[in-house]
Length: 167
Image (cartoon, rainbow, N blue to C red; front, side):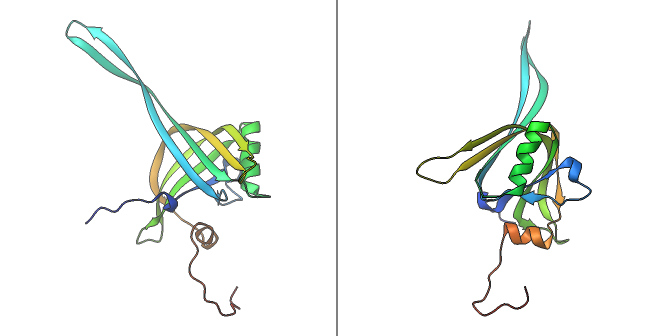
């Protein structure tokens, strides 16, 4: 099987405030432009008579995302509120081109808290919003289900020019 490059436009983040898990599906933040996941581990070099020995300390994950502000974006309002209240947020990083035979998509699931919210209105462009998340644990790789509504949001399909009465 030939390797295929993963394009950034195909990897999206879906969010849900954890306390709303019983009543709400995950939602995409509108107009995502980029996101980054950084995994680090502290290490300590211990000097021995045979040379240095490195020990691995605590592992941490930080995730950041940037999007263009959409007027009345409910998910953005919920994420900002979660930062203020310290609510736990669920995050799915979904590869929309990695659809499995069972109809699910390759994904990584994270839980964490919003540690930073930034809004940057520039005079010569769109308002940019940046969020940073401090992730609990290591995240978990798996497969995510996208509802028809979520699929429509993350990737739309071709529509004909004729009148569409099905919607």
